[in-house]
Length: 99
Image (cartoon, rainbow, N blue to C red; front, side):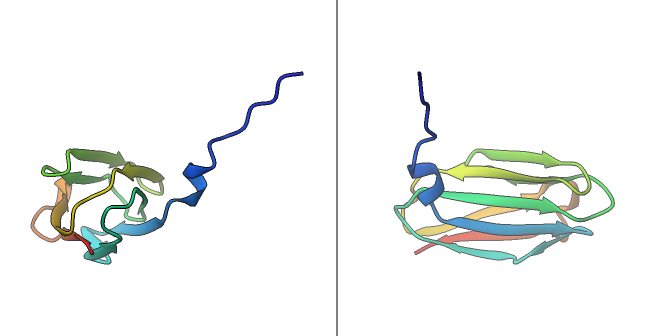
């Protein structure tokens, strides 16, 4: 009999939540622990597509309406990192602050 287990570390990482709706981000500033791997759960509650994008963090995620997905981030040095909704750049600008 062969038993396989999921890695324990995946469940131990902090999870941060971001809501994208009607060209806005909730919250606009995400505070995360510095030097710690974390999961960002992004949900699009708007009527159209939304796209989480951070050029400096090299992350991109397109979400259809009603979809929720996860991104995993490697440990970040303390600092501020910008992100935006590619489809609503005029109104959806955010920051990840690693402390």
